[in-house]
Image 1 (tube, rainbow, N blue to C red):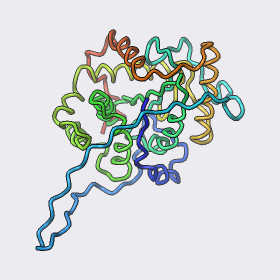
Image 2 (spheres, rainbow, N blue to C red; image 1 turned 90 degrees about the vertical axis):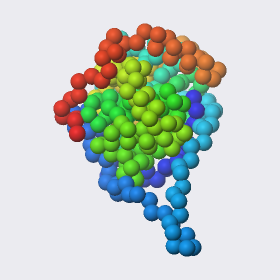
Image 3 (cartoon, rainbow, N blue to C red; image 1 turned 120 degrees about the horizontal axis):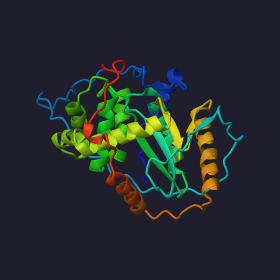
Length: 305
Protein backbone atom coordinates (compact mmCIF):
# COMPACT_ATOMS: atom_id res chain seq x y z
CA UNK A 1 0.00 0.00 0.00
CA UNK A 2 1.12 3.52 -0.65
CA UNK A 3 0.76 6.72 1.26
CA UNK A 4 -1.85 9.23 0.22
CA UNK A 5 -0.52 12.70 -0.15
CA UNK A 6 -2.11 15.02 2.49
CA UNK A 7 -2.96 17.79 0.05
CA UNK A 8 -6.10 19.14 1.69
CA UNK A 9 -6.15 18.94 5.53
CA UNK A 10 -8.27 22.10 5.59
CA UNK A 11 -11.16 20.22 4.03
CA UNK A 12 -11.90 18.31 7.22
CA UNK A 13 -11.89 21.57 9.16
CA UNK A 14 -14.17 23.27 6.67
CA UNK A 15 -16.82 20.59 7.02
CA UNK A 16 -16.55 19.63 10.68
CA UNK A 17 -18.87 22.24 12.13
CA UNK A 18 -21.82 21.33 9.96
CA UNK A 19 -21.48 17.61 9.33
CA UNK A 20 -20.38 16.01 12.57
CA UNK A 21 -21.08 12.27 12.06
CA UNK A 22 -23.74 12.62 9.37
CA UNK A 23 -23.66 9.84 6.81
CA UNK A 24 -24.71 9.84 3.18
CA UNK A 25 -27.43 7.30 2.48
CA UNK A 26 -28.21 5.75 -0.86
CA UNK A 27 -31.86 6.74 -0.74
CA UNK A 28 -31.35 10.43 -0.07
CA UNK A 29 -27.72 11.41 -0.54
CA UNK A 30 -26.75 14.62 1.23
CA UNK A 31 -25.81 17.62 -0.81
CA UNK A 32 -22.23 18.76 -0.70
CA UNK A 33 -21.21 21.59 1.56
CA UNK A 34 -21.69 24.92 -0.21
CA UNK A 35 -18.82 25.78 -2.47
CA UNK A 36 -18.26 28.62 -4.86
CA UNK A 37 -19.08 27.71 -8.46
CA UNK A 38 -16.09 26.99 -10.59
CA UNK A 39 -14.91 30.12 -12.34
CA UNK A 40 -12.65 30.56 -15.31
CA UNK A 41 -9.33 31.65 -13.89
CA UNK A 42 -8.34 35.17 -14.85
CA UNK A 43 -4.75 35.33 -15.99
CA UNK A 44 -2.68 38.16 -14.53
CA UNK A 45 -1.83 41.00 -16.88
CA UNK A 46 1.66 41.32 -18.25
CA UNK A 47 3.60 44.55 -18.44
CA UNK A 48 2.09 45.49 -21.81
CA UNK A 49 -1.45 44.95 -20.56
CA UNK A 50 -1.97 41.60 -22.29
CA UNK A 51 -3.15 38.64 -20.29
CA UNK A 52 -0.48 36.12 -19.46
CA UNK A 53 -1.15 32.56 -20.62
CA UNK A 54 -2.75 30.34 -18.02
CA UNK A 55 -0.52 27.75 -16.42
CA UNK A 56 -1.28 24.17 -17.36
CA UNK A 57 -1.95 21.83 -14.43
CA UNK A 58 1.00 19.72 -13.46
CA UNK A 59 0.80 15.96 -12.85
CA UNK A 60 0.85 15.01 -9.19
CA UNK A 61 3.99 13.46 -7.78
CA UNK A 62 3.85 9.68 -7.35
CA UNK A 63 2.65 8.52 -3.97
CA UNK A 64 5.33 7.25 -1.60
CA UNK A 65 5.42 3.68 -0.37
CA UNK A 66 3.73 3.15 2.97
CA UNK A 67 5.81 1.96 5.91
CA UNK A 68 3.61 -0.46 7.89
CA UNK A 69 3.08 0.31 11.54
CA UNK A 70 3.55 -2.12 14.42
CA UNK A 71 0.81 -4.33 15.78
CA UNK A 72 -0.40 -2.68 18.98
CA UNK A 73 -3.26 -3.64 21.29
CA UNK A 74 -6.49 -1.77 20.51
CA UNK A 75 -7.28 1.06 22.85
CA UNK A 76 -10.45 1.76 24.80
CA UNK A 77 -13.36 -0.53 25.72
CA UNK A 78 -14.18 -3.51 23.50
CA UNK A 79 -16.94 -2.83 20.98
CA UNK A 80 -20.45 -4.11 21.67
CA UNK A 81 -22.09 -6.33 19.06
CA UNK A 82 -25.35 -4.84 17.82
CA UNK A 83 -24.34 -1.37 18.97
CA UNK A 84 -20.83 -0.70 17.71
CA UNK A 85 -20.76 -3.31 14.97
CA UNK A 86 -22.82 -5.92 13.16
CA UNK A 87 -21.53 -9.41 12.47
CA UNK A 88 -22.16 -10.40 8.86
CA UNK A 89 -23.40 -13.96 8.47
CA UNK A 90 -21.21 -15.98 6.09
CA UNK A 91 -19.22 -12.83 5.36
CA UNK A 92 -16.38 -13.05 2.87
CA UNK A 93 -13.55 -10.63 2.04
CA UNK A 94 -13.81 -8.29 -0.91
CA UNK A 95 -10.82 -10.09 -2.45
CA UNK A 96 -11.42 -13.85 -2.33
CA UNK A 97 -8.57 -15.64 -0.60
CA UNK A 98 -6.92 -12.44 0.56
CA UNK A 99 -4.12 -13.44 2.97
CA UNK A 100 -4.40 -10.09 4.71
CA UNK A 101 -7.13 -8.74 6.98
CA UNK A 102 -9.20 -6.38 4.87
CA UNK A 103 -10.54 -3.00 5.86
CA UNK A 104 -12.99 -1.83 3.22
CA UNK A 105 -14.23 1.73 3.25
CA UNK A 106 -17.44 2.27 1.31
CA UNK A 107 -17.23 5.90 0.25
CA UNK A 108 -18.58 8.38 -2.26
CA UNK A 109 -16.87 11.44 -3.68
CA UNK A 110 -20.21 13.29 -3.57
CA UNK A 111 -20.64 12.49 0.14
CA UNK A 112 -19.67 15.37 2.47
CA UNK A 113 -19.32 13.02 5.44
CA UNK A 114 -16.76 11.00 3.48
CA UNK A 115 -14.87 14.20 2.73
CA UNK A 116 -14.77 15.03 6.43
CA UNK A 117 -13.70 11.51 7.38
CA UNK A 118 -10.93 11.28 4.78
CA UNK A 119 -8.14 13.25 6.55
CA UNK A 120 -8.71 11.30 9.78
CA UNK A 121 -8.88 8.00 7.94
CA UNK A 122 -5.72 8.64 5.90
CA UNK A 123 -3.54 9.04 8.99
CA UNK A 124 -4.98 5.85 10.45
CA UNK A 125 -4.42 3.90 7.21
CA UNK A 126 -0.79 5.01 7.10
CA UNK A 127 -0.20 3.32 10.48
CA UNK A 128 -1.89 -0.02 9.69
CA UNK A 129 0.28 -3.12 10.28
CA UNK A 130 1.61 -5.17 7.38
CA UNK A 131 -1.04 -7.88 7.82
CA UNK A 132 -3.87 -5.42 7.14
CA UNK A 133 -4.93 -4.18 3.71
CA UNK A 134 -7.07 -1.07 3.23
CA UNK A 135 -9.40 -1.10 0.20
CA UNK A 136 -11.47 1.93 -0.81
CA UNK A 137 -14.71 0.84 -2.49
CA UNK A 138 -16.72 3.59 -4.21
CA UNK A 139 -20.43 3.14 -3.56
CA UNK A 140 -22.39 2.74 -6.83
CA UNK A 141 -25.75 3.71 -5.37
CA UNK A 142 -27.05 5.04 -8.68
CA UNK A 143 -27.69 8.56 -9.99
CA UNK A 144 -24.80 10.96 -9.50
CA UNK A 145 -22.89 8.37 -7.45
CA UNK A 146 -22.25 6.35 -10.60
CA UNK A 147 -19.85 8.49 -12.68
CA UNK A 148 -17.65 9.07 -9.65
CA UNK A 149 -17.53 5.36 -8.81
CA UNK A 150 -16.56 4.66 -12.42
CA UNK A 151 -13.98 7.45 -12.30
CA UNK A 152 -12.32 5.91 -9.24
CA UNK A 153 -11.90 2.57 -10.99
CA UNK A 154 -10.75 4.26 -14.21
CA UNK A 155 -8.14 6.13 -12.13
CA UNK A 156 -7.12 2.84 -10.53
CA UNK A 157 -6.69 1.33 -13.99
CA UNK A 158 -4.55 4.31 -15.02
CA UNK A 159 -2.44 4.09 -11.85
CA UNK A 160 -3.47 7.52 -10.54
CA UNK A 161 -6.14 6.61 -7.97
CA UNK A 162 -4.01 7.48 -4.94
CA UNK A 163 -2.61 10.70 -6.42
CA UNK A 164 -6.06 11.94 -7.43
CA UNK A 165 -8.17 10.72 -4.50
CA UNK A 166 -7.92 13.75 -2.24
CA UNK A 167 -8.02 16.16 -5.17
CA UNK A 168 -11.45 14.88 -6.25
CA UNK A 169 -12.87 15.50 -2.78
CA UNK A 170 -11.39 18.99 -2.75
CA UNK A 171 -12.65 19.81 -6.25
CA UNK A 172 -16.16 18.72 -5.33
CA UNK A 173 -16.54 20.03 -1.78
CA UNK A 174 -14.30 23.11 -1.70
CA UNK A 175 -13.68 24.52 -5.15
CA UNK A 176 -16.87 23.57 -6.96
CA UNK A 177 -14.95 22.32 -9.99
CA UNK A 178 -17.02 19.13 -9.85
CA UNK A 179 -20.62 18.72 -8.76
CA UNK A 180 -23.64 16.41 -8.90
CA UNK A 181 -24.31 17.35 -12.51
CA UNK A 182 -20.77 16.77 -13.79
CA UNK A 183 -20.79 14.53 -16.84
CA UNK A 184 -18.35 11.72 -17.49
CA UNK A 185 -16.40 13.79 -20.08
CA UNK A 186 -16.19 16.68 -17.59
CA UNK A 187 -14.92 14.38 -14.87
CA UNK A 188 -12.44 12.86 -17.32
CA UNK A 189 -11.11 16.33 -18.16
CA UNK A 190 -10.54 16.94 -14.45
CA UNK A 191 -8.41 13.80 -14.25
CA UNK A 192 -6.34 15.07 -17.16
CA UNK A 193 -4.25 17.09 -14.71
CA UNK A 194 -2.76 13.81 -13.48
CA UNK A 195 -1.17 13.04 -16.81
CA UNK A 196 -3.87 10.94 -18.48
CA UNK A 197 -5.56 11.62 -21.79
CA UNK A 198 -9.14 12.77 -20.97
CA UNK A 199 -10.68 11.03 -23.97
CA UNK A 200 -8.97 7.76 -23.14
CA UNK A 201 -9.95 8.15 -19.50
CA UNK A 202 -13.60 8.66 -20.50
CA UNK A 203 -13.45 5.50 -22.61
CA UNK A 204 -12.02 3.61 -19.65
CA UNK A 205 -14.88 4.86 -17.47
CA UNK A 206 -17.33 3.23 -19.89
CA UNK A 207 -15.31 0.07 -20.41
CA UNK A 208 -16.39 -3.48 -19.64
CA UNK A 209 -13.67 -3.89 -17.01
CA UNK A 210 -14.71 -0.78 -15.09
CA UNK A 211 -18.38 -1.76 -15.23
CA UNK A 212 -17.40 -5.19 -13.92
CA UNK A 213 -15.59 -3.60 -10.98
CA UNK A 214 -18.55 -1.32 -10.27
CA UNK A 215 -20.88 -4.32 -10.23
CA UNK A 216 -18.49 -6.20 -7.98
CA UNK A 217 -18.49 -3.25 -5.58
CA UNK A 218 -22.29 -3.10 -5.66
CA UNK A 219 -22.63 -6.77 -4.86
CA UNK A 220 -20.14 -6.60 -2.00
CA UNK A 221 -21.98 -3.66 -0.40
CA UNK A 222 -25.28 -5.49 -0.79
CA UNK A 223 -23.86 -8.67 0.80
CA UNK A 224 -22.43 -6.76 3.74
CA UNK A 225 -25.53 -4.59 4.28
CA UNK A 226 -23.90 -1.25 3.50
CA UNK A 227 -26.55 1.36 2.75
CA UNK A 228 -24.66 4.57 3.51
CA UNK A 229 -21.24 6.13 3.44
CA UNK A 230 -18.69 6.25 4.92
CA UNK A 231 -18.91 2.69 6.23
CA UNK A 232 -16.07 0.40 7.31
CA UNK A 233 -16.28 -3.37 6.76
CA UNK A 234 -13.65 -5.52 8.46
CA UNK A 235 -12.58 -8.65 6.57
CA UNK A 236 -16.07 -9.04 5.15
CA UNK A 237 -17.20 -10.18 8.63
CA UNK A 238 -17.96 -7.03 10.61
CA UNK A 239 -19.65 -3.75 9.66
CA UNK A 240 -18.88 -0.80 11.91
CA UNK A 241 -22.10 0.88 13.01
CA UNK A 242 -21.13 2.79 16.16
CA UNK A 243 -18.73 5.48 17.26
CA UNK A 244 -19.39 8.96 18.58
CA UNK A 245 -16.60 10.52 16.51
CA UNK A 246 -14.54 9.58 13.48
CA UNK A 247 -11.69 8.59 15.79
CA UNK A 248 -14.07 6.42 17.80
CA UNK A 249 -15.15 4.60 14.64
CA UNK A 250 -11.51 3.80 13.99
CA UNK A 251 -11.09 2.62 17.59
CA UNK A 252 -13.91 0.13 16.95
CA UNK A 253 -12.22 -0.91 13.72
CA UNK A 254 -8.94 -1.53 15.59
CA UNK A 255 -10.73 -3.91 17.95
CA UNK A 256 -12.43 -5.74 15.07
CA UNK A 257 -9.11 -6.12 13.26
CA UNK A 258 -7.64 -7.66 16.41
CA UNK A 259 -10.62 -10.01 16.65
CA UNK A 260 -10.07 -11.16 13.07
CA UNK A 261 -6.35 -11.62 13.71
CA UNK A 262 -7.17 -13.85 16.67
CA UNK A 263 -9.81 -15.76 14.70
CA UNK A 264 -7.41 -16.36 11.83
CA UNK A 265 -4.67 -17.39 14.24
CA UNK A 266 -2.10 -15.59 12.15
CA UNK A 267 0.84 -13.45 13.13
CA UNK A 268 1.36 -10.16 11.28
CA UNK A 269 2.67 -10.96 7.80
CA UNK A 270 5.78 -9.40 6.38
CA UNK A 271 4.76 -6.82 3.77
CA UNK A 272 6.05 -8.18 0.48
CA UNK A 273 4.86 -5.31 -1.66
CA UNK A 274 2.24 -5.37 -4.35
CA UNK A 275 2.80 -8.95 -5.54
CA UNK A 276 0.37 -10.59 -3.14
CA UNK A 277 -2.26 -7.93 -3.77
CA UNK A 278 -1.85 -8.35 -7.51
CA UNK A 279 -2.33 -12.10 -7.23
CA UNK A 280 -5.50 -11.63 -5.19
CA UNK A 281 -6.81 -9.13 -7.72
CA UNK A 282 -6.06 -11.53 -10.56
CA UNK A 283 -7.95 -14.33 -8.81
CA UNK A 284 -10.94 -12.07 -8.25
CA UNK A 285 -10.96 -10.70 -11.77
CA UNK A 286 -10.54 -14.15 -13.32
CA UNK A 287 -14.17 -14.91 -12.48
CA UNK A 288 -16.11 -11.66 -12.94
CA UNK A 289 -19.60 -11.36 -11.54
CA UNK A 290 -22.32 -12.82 -13.70
CA UNK A 291 -24.00 -9.50 -14.16
CA UNK A 292 -20.80 -7.63 -15.04
CA UNK A 293 -21.60 -7.56 -18.73
CA UNK A 294 -24.82 -5.72 -18.05
CA UNK A 295 -22.87 -2.51 -17.39
CA UNK A 296 -24.68 -0.16 -15.06
CA UNK A 297 -27.56 -1.51 -13.02
CA UNK A 298 -30.93 0.14 -12.66
CA UNK A 299 -30.63 3.63 -11.15
CA UNK A 300 -32.80 4.39 -8.18
CA UNK A 301 -35.10 7.27 -9.25
CA UNK A 302 -34.67 8.84 -5.82
CA UNK A 303 -30.97 9.25 -6.54
CA UNK A 304 -31.14 10.51 -10.06
CA UNK A 305 -30.34 14.14 -10.78
